[in-house]
Amino acid sequence: MFARVTEKTFYQYLKCPNWIYFDAHALEKNVREPLMEQLIDDGLIEEKQREIISDRQEIAEVTAEDPEEAFRQTLAFMREGRQTIFHGVLIDKHWIGHPDVLEKVEGKSTLRDFYYVAADLKRSRFLRDEFKFQGSFYADLLERIQKVKPQMGYVITPDRTVLKYPLAPFVGEYELTLSEIEKIIAGKKPAHFVTTGCKQSPWFSSCVGESQTCDDISQLNRVWRQEVHLLEQAGVKTIAQLAASSVADLKRRAPLVHPDRLEIMRDQAVAIKEHRHIIRRAMAFPESPVELFFDIESDPLRDFDYLFGLLAVEGKKESYHPFFAASPAQEKDMWEEFVGFIERHTDAPIYHYGWFEKEVVWRFMSRYGISAAAKEALERNLIDVLERLRPAVILPLSFYSLKDIAAYLGFHWRADDASGANSVLWFEEWLKKKDQKRLQKILEYNEDDVRATAVLKQWLAQNAC
Image 1 (cartoon, rainbow, N blue to C red):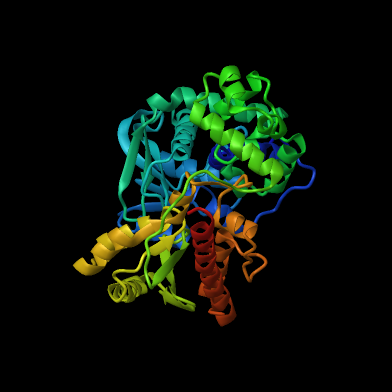
Image 2: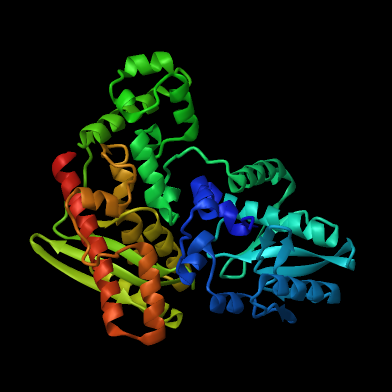
């Protein structure tokens, strides 16, 4: 049976083209947890989807589980002119689209004096490239079915904001990507190229294994495909070759790559080859008798940020403070308790890892309000450790996630299966069964995250000053 192309195929291609290849051609199929499938491309759980579209007057829901039957039910609703179609299915040969919403608009089509446009319900408040590819795919399918192609694509956010984008400027890139996807499904093996997106693939270990076996340059952290292409044209095709090259020689052989990037890439090749870190510049942290380390746990399937964890470090004394909401209705109380804690520590730096914590804090600030003192403290004291680390330290790692770096430093999470994705599954299980052991596992995972952040910050303070 010929492998299908779905809207999720575009997400997979952008993250790791080999994801599509292995899904289509592997002898042993990788069966994934259904909820994990829903996490792909920022989708939302059905309960949240229903909440978002609950203000619509007329909703026709496609309920058939078999794709062909669901397609027939969708067509019937379209021919009837139903205003909103929920969970429709669009099929043409081996293409199958699952737009969250089909909406009727005025215009001529084979359906009479109306046609349909597609929208997806996403957690993200921003348009991403994968969303545009998916919207273009829906438009392609709709054109084949109703003989008129929508000109706009739509994403609906959890607060019911409609993000719209024109499809015409994206046609060339979409068609080129679709062509590459079809070639991969037909048997063309993509070149192995390790990216952070590979981590989301169930075939991650296979992708990394190929790159390590070949010693290819894509193992460098945050390297661009064009940079690798230019280095390969210059005859530098492996980590070993790059590590053995001088920066002056690389500048001569690859003049189109920025000199600063050549130096960073060469140093990282050395770090990987010799399995050691390299300090590129000194970094300073504010001095304070109390330091706070901050991490948030969220359930993206429900657009629900349910746990704010803080580790307070005062000399040798450490204390973990979880602020927890069992339901979205408790978010405001959780936020107010967290803000109250910050008001008692307005001079303490608040270390976090990556952009997510800051984005959530600003969102909660807007949604629930905040005192002037706490707002000023958060604006002044939030410190992204990853942002400080990147220009200062080169690590012998392909990925700079907190778990990768903390493992390099010798830190271990208590749960063998600790991961952000698994924490979502744990929380979903807790919501259904209210098992306190599962909740305790989530709290321990969050505490380990903040402790890992503290270990990293302390290591940087000792080694990169």
